[in-house]
Length: 185
Image (cartoon, rainbow, N blue to C red; front, side, top):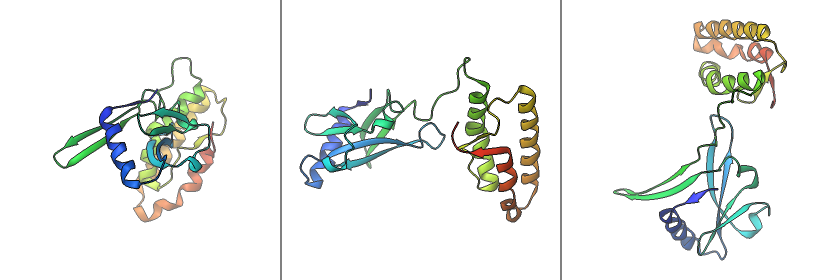
């Protein structure tokens, strides 16, 4: 479960007191969880803002609510506030928010998806402004031979994109989309 330090609790109490709203709490949720762009969002939450399925953490005078869909992504997360010379720094460490490297028992498709999202996405996005984080291989049951061919095609396409002037790189989205399908595995 998420751990909230005393420093963070005191900081939240201070922020909530400034709002002057009865029973105001803090909601924490993960956005883009399981991807390289994963992040935590903290927001004020009144009773009417809650869905009712959140995990509630009592923090001596106020509540922190963890969005139900974010609970697993925020497992073992730590929220801390450290006072420093310029005021302070709120830090959230969520070791599972970006997902994890597929284990040895993961399917070939899961391992390929991990490489696509973790390794290729940033590079392709820089070259073409296309984000493949929600793309996947057309054939989930691809054989190693198919994946080898796919790898060759991606490498060839990236080299071709990289060799083009910036103004011409926008012409490649359809070629990239031919290799991927939009959606979730």
